[in-house]
Image 1 (tube, chains in turn brown, orange):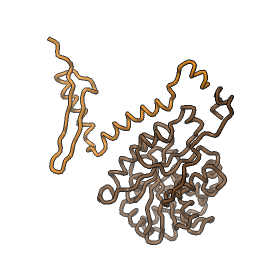
Image 2 (cartoon, rainbow over the protein chains, first blue to last red):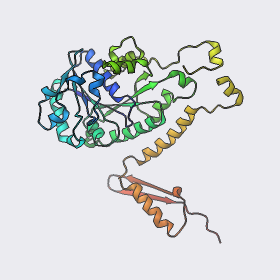
Image 3 (tube, each protein chain N blue to C red):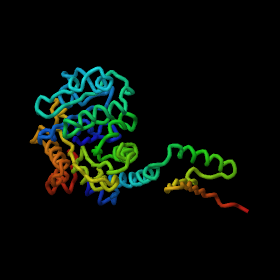
Image 4 (cartoon, one colour):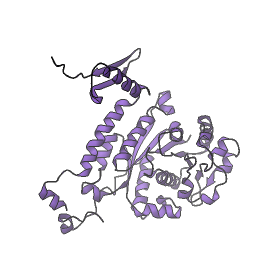
Length: 272
Length: 85
């Protein structure tokens, strides 16, 4: 039986799609049969980040409306065998997404996959609530920046009230914090919230920390999820994140400043 | 820059300002979690009614809803200004 994980944040542009693609790729690399679903109806982007934008024929809405079968809409990843993408519709109205429809699709997928990753749209409206509703776990993507942290807290409020697990009681949905675009140098100079502050304010366990990295833009330029870039800091940090998601113990990396010389320490030059 | 800041005594870094602001706003947000949607509206309208009789500030009103198994208690705290004479 598959585990459903929503990647969400409230605020836009913090790295939801990058993270959903990277986590799904990492899970598949570790042998888990994984599908990543784009819930951002009207503004689909997951296909671009996954590098399959030219292979989109049918989408999630087509499946929900019965215009295409699930097997027609799912796109098999070119690089990893057990990884699939289910794109969002670019033209349809977001009202075409229904709770019953989403439930039907997820129930079918649950039978044949190990992990279902739901890439949530930004905001706290319908699309975001549908993406999180059936989730077993949530990855809350947060930048070390005031508006992102505040929005993450709003999302945590929704996760604890507007999800199936919250409504039906029983075992609560598991929440994970994923901090992205972290700059240890700026934290040291006192101009960026540090990870302890963010963890303390949101009070949920830290799943991973992704440093601000050139590799992320490079990866999205090429349509190759950053997890494939094993030499990069961000690629390795997502790898660690996926290992922790699978219950393994991984020490935190990339959260400390790179060593600088005595003179540059005394006289600044913290920005590079 | 850091040495200069230190000598000037400018030690309040922007990150600690951010943390303080967030702690306040997040505490406020959590207070509203699970409340019915009509609460902010109810609070505004109650404030209007009170103002027909007494002039009070926006933050003079404090409202919370506690729910138990069999009953809910709406707690309303209004700070009135000192009466003169």
